[in-house]
Length: 282
Image (cartoon, helix red, strand yellow):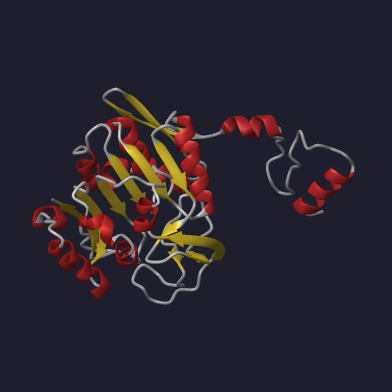
């Protein structure tokens, strides 16, 4: 009998499944639901005044913790420039690695946007575990250049996964890619959110949406012109003309960037060769 059939049979018989059925061929050990819930794996990253907690339900989310200081040191260096009370908008927050870190270590107020369902759930759990509900507000929607209902195309249905795209079935190189799963989603522009008071004018914006960064920026032109905005971190794919145009656009708006920072951040090999963060300041 399949595991699904056994589960259905257990429910039909009134068994509330205090013990999970064993699977044929698997080690003959039973795990109670209470014990399973108690596992609740988490990992901590220490900092000067304490530690930050992240939920790690699989190897990928665990890797995000263990590689935290090596994956994007430029992002961490950027966060150290924030002042307590600053406002950060994190577009493509994933499970909140940087949103949580910025709020906990710098005392900034964060508005985090993550449309993927599993990542959004973990983002909120990370907010809860770190006691940051007064500093971090998470929204389960995409930021883009228009407000509309559409589809979020997932590269993989996995907690901590990335390279998902809103409204277009594309990879991070903006090439057609068959998605592993599709999810209903809604997008809005940052300018609209600021205009209606849902989000204050940010002092810092982080944009990492694996390919459609230019659409996010197209939807926040008024915000980019606001003098309260001091810095913007954008993941740029140097192989895309749409992304190369971002650099020209940001310079035209009065922002500057450091060539050394970019050269260090841009990947020199692998699938993401030519992709890296640009930190724009003014």
